[in-house]
Length: 257
Ligand code: NDP
Ligand code: 8X3
Image (tube, rainbow, N blue to C red; front, side, top):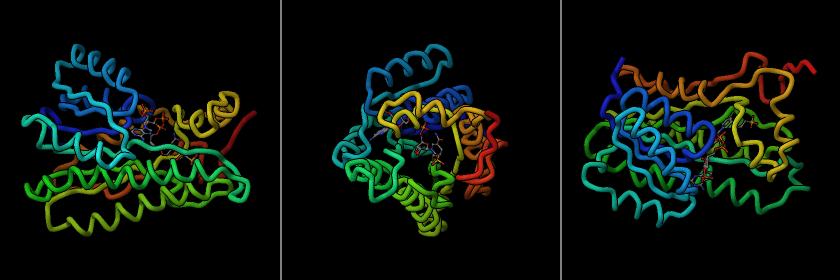
C-alpha cells in the first residue's frame, strides 16, 4: 500500500455527497488537499474543519468546472507549493430531470453535458500537463453505472457518463508511457444530494429513490477512492463498479416496501 501522507490531491465538487466524503477520507490518510466547488462558503467551512482535525495543509477555492477560463486561471494561479498535483479526483457532476427525451427540458441537457463532460475535460486538461512533464500522477474519475448501461428517462445523463467512460479509456492509452494512472470508479445508487438536484429540489421524489433498501453511502465510495489511490505505483485499478447489495443493474433494484 502506498501512503498518501503529504500527497497533493485536487478534488472537484467537495461541498456534498461523494466529494465531501472523499475530502474527509483523504484527510484522514494525511493527504494535502486542494478542494473546490461553486459554494465557496461551504468549501471554506470544510477546509477549516479538516485543517484543525487532521493537521493537514488545505487549499480551498471556488470553482465552477463548466467555466474553462475559471478552471485554467485557478490552476495557473496556484501558489508554488500547490502546483505539483499528485492525484486529481474528477468528482463534480450532476443529473437534471428523469424524463423521456421527447418530454425533457433541453436546459438540463446543457447543464449535464457542460458539467459532466466538458467540466471534467477542462479540469483534466488544466492539470495533466504537469503530470506528463513529471511522468507521475493519478487521475480518478467518478463515473457511474450510467456509463455502462443506458436506462429509460436518462438519455443525456447516461450519454454524459458514457462519455466519461470513453474519455477515461482513451486517456489511459494516451498516457500509458508516462507513468500516469487513469482510473474510474463507477457507483450505482449512492444516497447524496444527487437526486435532489436531479429532481430540481423535490425532496419527496429524491427520498423515494433510496427507500426500501440500503443504498451506498458516500463514505463507501470514498473508501473505494482511498483503495484505488493507495495501490502500489505499478497497479492501476482501471475501473471499479460499486453497487449496493440490493442493486444488480441500473434498473434492477430489490426494494422491500
Ligand atoms: P451531490 O449533489 O451530493 O454532490 C455534487 C457535488 O458536485 C457538489 O459538491 C456540487 O457542489 C458539485 N458540483 C456540481 N456542479 C458543479 C460545477 N459546475 N462545478 C463545480 N462543482 C460542481 O452528488 P454526488 O456526490 O452523488 O455526485 C458526485 C459525483 O458522483 C457526480 O459526478 C455524480 O454523477 C456521480 N455519481 C453519483 C451517484 C449517486 O447515486 N449519487 C452514482 C454514480 C455516480 P456545488 O453545488 O457547491 O458546486
Ligand atoms: C447516478 C446513479 O444510476 O441513478 O449516476 O444514474 S444512476
